Image (tube, rainbow, N blue to C red; front, side, top):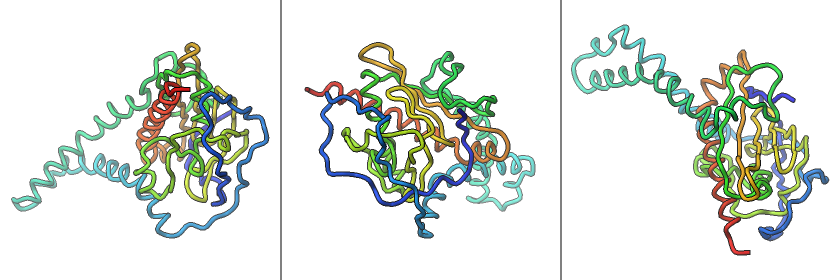
Length: 288
């Protein structure tokens, strides 16, 4: 099974949410078998307003576009001595500072920040190990992020399996997600109606649009098409490792990913791993 991040347009998803008014599941309730019939809504087309499109594209990609421009124009400005061609004053001073920042940015970005984010929290052995969803061919870029969760694997799975824009959210920076128009709220409790997932189900990422689950193996792996895999590996009965693996293919998709997707993806995914860790450990420690 291959899971490679590409810039393809996700599958559309209906805006209708299959959410009931059931109360939160007690922490001691067993995890339902994900092989049961899924309650996920069938994908259908949904029109987005121009403002939704602007927010959905501008918020996640605006920062990377500005950074890419700085990394390209900074060295060109230094070679061409552009600031010296401007009359003395604040504009020339600003130009010099931007030129220096642009010259340093590629080294900080590609030499320090991205390598650290690609392996954040993971061990060298975890980075080398094959995981569910890995492609047969070596990817251009592989990221393996991980965190230790002091809660049983089954408890962590209950939080992981209910991710989605129309379900439990993504446990990351809701304010940033909603600035992009995602219209979500990360759950603070386990919901029974969100526990049933099956291979082939849609996973809502944005109002009206979804990708697809290509593997659901409780309480071990959740593989998401064109996105990556989340894998839970028990350490003992009371703790586990939660890993996030993404594989970026070559060609145009790889270029798109590196320049526009990688940084926001890494930052939000790191937040998601920490968000699941916090919730699973808190629910595990709560009185029964």
